[in-house]
Image (cartoon, rainbow, N blue to C red; front, side, top):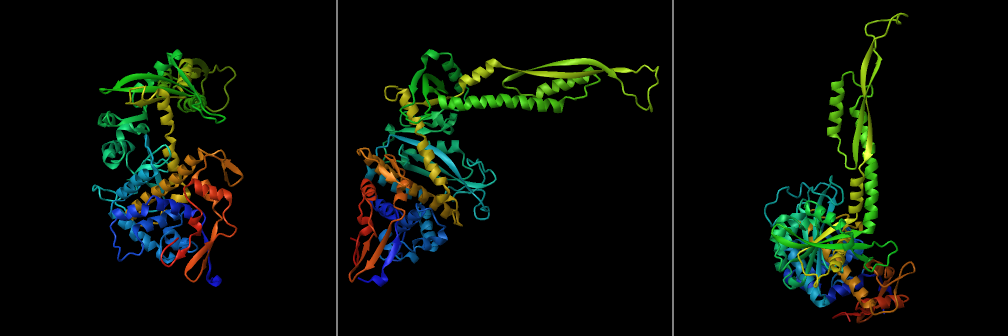
Length: 572
């Protein structure tokens, strides 16, 4: 035993990620579809992606610092035999990103995902679709052309509708389809100016080819209102593409259905909190209708949320006060405080003011007052003579009053908290109105995926100077999210049969841990590697505690991930 040459590795949660990565055969699947020279490359594309993912799921260091990240890691155990940390550098990573881009990064991602679905035996019942944007500081104009006509061109980091409310920054976009368990089955890395409605239309056309191993006829597609356009509805094959979405206000039908539901209070179906045990959980009630858009029939479910109503009633009340304030400002600006000496001019001013005034919750009433005032003398100096009778003139002034339109206010308050869902799945026996609402509420699965992608820990700085590499790296980021959420899913599924919660940091206990919280449980784990004559033996000072061992077991892994012995021939 050579104590002088022993090493201390900061392993943390990395062996868990590495172990699941290997179980899902991700390296093998990447190497199958990415062109590379086995004789010249010591580091395969699959190993390079693994190195990037481990780095991403540890908080993410800039690419030029990746060697430093692996300096105190057990690289041969995590990445592969005979791999040294110095080989995991920005140049090697850049070359592998180029290989992935040239092999079609999107297809590489799809190949890995479909294999993972099969190995994890995941039954996909619904896919939730949405897009998000990622803003970039700096000058990308010099490296990415503004105009791209060729589909083979990389993404364009440019200006577009920003979901980060940063219209001053260039951006790229992600278009993602996830399962209820937050697993991103489908991913598009998009140019920053990609239109959401157009993207939804493209997905409809491509979905059958790109998810060929999934039985799409049994799947519900859940998307936001960008899906529901006249063109997209025409494009959808109602026999194979069953969808749920929210009906946008651009269709007059939305307001019509809401008013129809209000007129039938006896038809509301009260659903309660839909099983939520949160203290301030929203309660729901629904009504169902069938109607036509174009030549197609759809089922519409008008939904009322108590929480949304509470928020929006406050919004209505703020708007009422805002109308009062803005009307006063507009009146003071448009109407002379000193009045008008000509009745025609006065009438002209008030009519012009009324024409510009846009009131939603008030009606304006005004009175024009005529009164006489002493006319100012012009060109005459000094006081008036005692017997001089002053001349008078007529002056016209206005007073206004805002009267609340009770009918409109009550209508808005009744309608507030309501939204309309649309589906082409007409049979309520196969999908009840309640199930339809629950499925749409699960849309937050894709939104929570976006939170991870937009987290500063993952994507605040993409230190890459080629659009091709940015695109390839973006798919790897989503692959990292897939792996993290698969780990979370495994543990949550296995906890369903348990009676005892798992322990997290901060004395927290839960049956629904997040992957991030579980990773922190292993944050301080270090491994000591001690060379012997024939092998390298590993020990964990103090060992893993029972809670850590339990988490590994729930994830389908064992302590050997940390402690395996490395011989000259293999890791055992």
